[in-house]
Image (tube, rainbow, N blue to C red; front, top):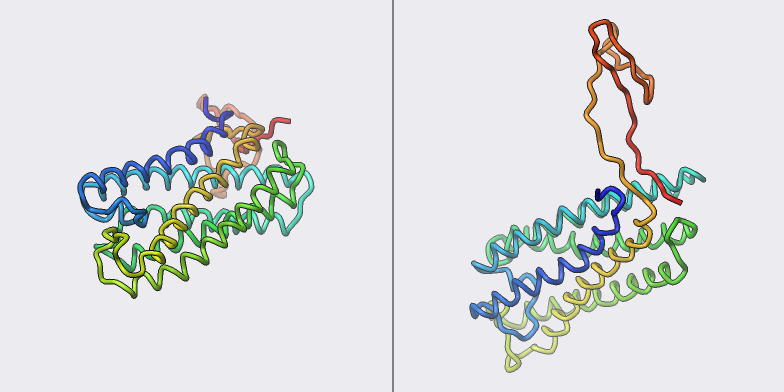
Length: 275
């Protein structure tokens, strides 16, 4: 059962996403749709057939990322109940929403190629990269606020902080160089060569993008040791009968046999911690 092996999902992300990028990169280079000189990640999935593969792979990544963010949200929500703090609870909820938006942005990047719907593609990229960076920062804050959460270590928290600093630095590099790159040439995306003017800025931008993507995957992988101490109890679909006032009976985790032999069960499903 995967319910007590939640650490598999962060590991899946850190392996699956880079492999997905290299798959579409290889297909695009093989078909001659991009040059091998560090194109933007989006350039490797801009034209068919690699665009089809790109979209499918990123959709899978987005779904798994959403699940990871949900597990992380429930993990912190469950643990902080031992010593409730409003600030932690609020930041946890905000981080969860931002994480979902970042994952949705990943799906948008894959489904709306830059050559077809550029504006929507860029909105998706903004959500994926910027909101993804904000999510990492919020999780780092929560890590320092909850240093005793099972699986957490000082080195792990410092590592997350370092990743956030690097992410911010490379994000600035992308914003500075991307604008110059797009305004200095009308060459088709992905077809830059070392002989083109502005290639240095282009390389700085594309390499920064690849590094940020890998850093984000590594950050998600840092959830692995903490996820080992938690399990997610599967959801249940339960039958209930309404009272005369159209209200659901409020007895928690109880069973009652009706006159017709029907067993009425009310239960609450939560994330449990293993200490």
